[in-house]
Image 1: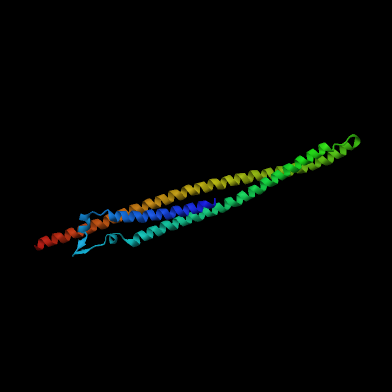
Image 2 (image 1 turned 90 degrees about the vertical axis):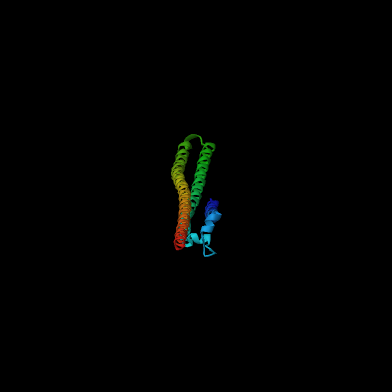
Length: 206
C-alpha cells in the first residue's frame, strides 16, 4: 500500500515531462518555409513566442493542483485501509483466542468428567462456562464480519478512486495537449496573415 502514493507521484512527474516534451516537438515541426514566414525585418521571430507561456503554465498548474487533490484522497484511503487492516487482525486474534479457550474447556470437561452424584453439579458449572465462551465467540464473530465488510467497502472505494484519478489525469493531459495545439496553430495563422498583409502592402507600394 505504501507504494501507491509513490506510483501516483511518479505518474504525475512523467506526464508533466511528456507534456513539456510534446511542446518542444511541436515547436520543432515548423518547416523551413514556415520559419521563413515568421521573419520580420531580418530578425527571427522566436517560435517559442508563438505560444503563450502563461496560458500553458496556468493549465499545467491547475492540472497538477487537481492531481495533488486526488493524491490526498488516495493517502486518506490508504490510512483508513491500514487502520481497518489492523482492527481486522485484532478481531481475528481475539476470535482465535476464544476458539482456543472453548476447545480447552471442552477437552478439560471430558478429561475430568466425574462419576456418580457429583456429575450433575460439575456439568452445570462447566455448561455455564461454555455458554459464556460461546456468547463471547458469537460477539467476536459478529465483529469480525463487520470488520471484513468494512474492509471490503473501503477497498472498493479505494479502487474507484484510483480509476477516477487515472481518468481525470488522462482527460486533463488531453485537454492541455489539445489547447496547446489550437493555440500554436492560431498563433501561426495570425503570423502568416500578418505577413500576407505586409506583402500585399509592399506590392501596392511598388
